[in-house]
Amino acid sequence: QVRLVESGGGLVQAGGSLRLSCAASGSIFSINAMGWYRPAPGKQRELVATITSGGNTNYANSEKGRCTISRDNAKNTVYLQMNSLKPEDTAVYYCKAVRREWGTPKDYWGQGTQVTVSS
Image 1 (cartoon, rainbow, N blue to C red):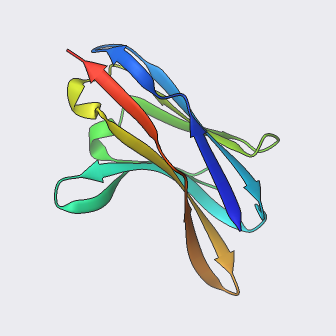
Image 2 (cartoon, rainbow, N blue to C red):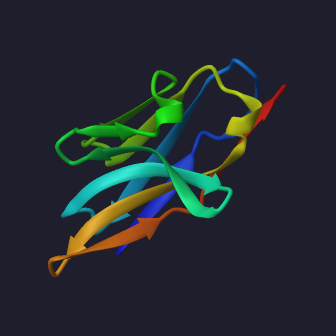
């Protein structure tokens, strides 16, 4: 089992910045990738950004240039730096870890952290 705890959400004015953190614990070996997601119309959750165990990153087109995902392997923590925030960024942001178990990828989710951007 993998436990994910997010933090760093809050209320910020448009144009401001936030840094979200996701700390992983438990059976963290064999985690292939971690990332951030948020709810989207017509989807369960949409990708914001992901980072693999090798450090490769992937961003939603809407987030390129505004967000940076990074990881601290010593702390088993992934960060999402969000800049130039807009009211439409308001959402609960969820951290996800993908761990290979018996050759099959399994998703683990955190409880989410609320980001609210005021205009």
